[in-house]
Amino acid sequence: MTIVVYHNPDCGTSRNVLEIIRASSADLVVIEYLKTGWTKPQLLALFAAANLTPRDALRTTKSPAQELGLLDPAVPADVLLEAMLDHPVLVNRPIVCSPKGVRLCRPSEVVLDLLDTLPPGPLYKEDGQMILNEKGERVD
Image (cartoon, rainbow, N blue to C red):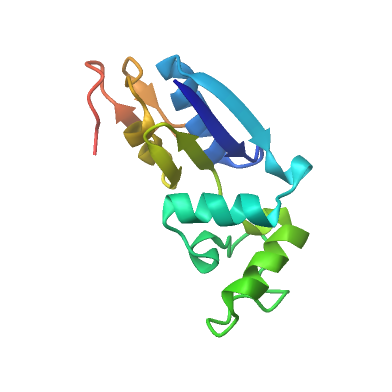
């Protein structure tokens, strides 16, 4: 199974998702979208596959969303999308694509639903929170 992750290395959630996927032994393609940017068709396809609107995918913290006036619910989706193309950091992350679907993996354990095989446990997030116990079972 090949999994594609739209990743920001400065994001702890994104790093956690990468480690979970690596521990599952799935083939991994990492796209650092802050370096590559987005295309409009790419974002539209990802959002449609993940059942997200641009508003759902908007990163509202640690981004220029407020300064750009994008937090107002009256801002239309096409304006949000154009801003995301100009400022890739406005797209929340990580977005993960696998044969099982496309998801915005926040919190990071959402990625478990996209894996064929769960990684062996125990497995912890960077902050020490256990997400899989020693039997490889989810800890909710």
